[in-house]
Amino acid sequence: MNTTTVIDLLRHGEPEGGRMYRGGGVDHALSEAGWEHMHASVERRSENDEDDWSAIISSPMLRCKEFATHLADEKNIPIQVVENLREAGYGNWEGRTTEEILEEHEDDYWEFFVDPVNRRPENAEPLEFFTPRINEVFGKVLTQYQGQHVLLVSHLAVTRAIIGIVLGMPLASQQLIDMPFAGMIRIINDRKGLRLLLL
Image 1 (cartoon, rainbow, N blue to C red):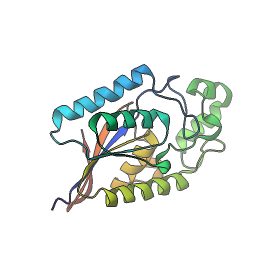
Image 2 (spheres, rainbow, N blue to C red):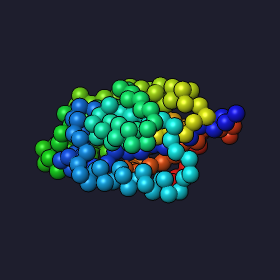
Image 3 (cartoon, rainbow, N blue to C red):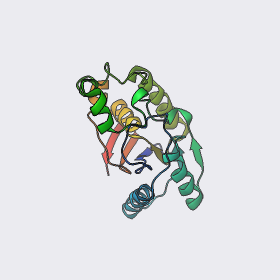
Image 4 (cartoon, one colour):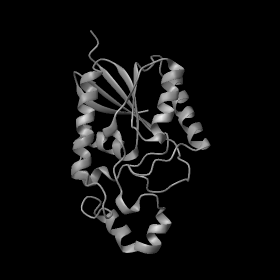
């Protein structure tokens, strides 16, 4: 019996409107370039991996769900959309570019980077709430898809949280992790325990 669980974490591609703080409240679809990013990432993975995914798990945000649904239809595999995989909320910064924030709230912007746990944007989701939300989803995925190879399509903050869970990282350290649009990383769970594999 196969007890090795493999979870490929795929960040969404570039959304319409380019780079900005979207969080869980601004629901832009993928741009044309974003669709290309996602297809290219999946194709690269397929070239280096013989086995295919048995299921796809997705955030409910359009920038994740639309591609995940398209891929599930294309590969004829089941998809599960999980509400609690939505991106962390960035409060009053949502829908705004870095340049706009710097122009109006430069001190707040830099304080956020010095202390991303305690100096979050006004009305943002606290990381003390966000990380347990993702931890709960991650635990359920490990149980529900034990022994399978699945694709999880989500966001940068979700990926940071999962990596932090696997590596036992403090909340502040997790915020130092970056990942390009449509970047992918692999989590493996077997008799050795949880570990991370760079693809």
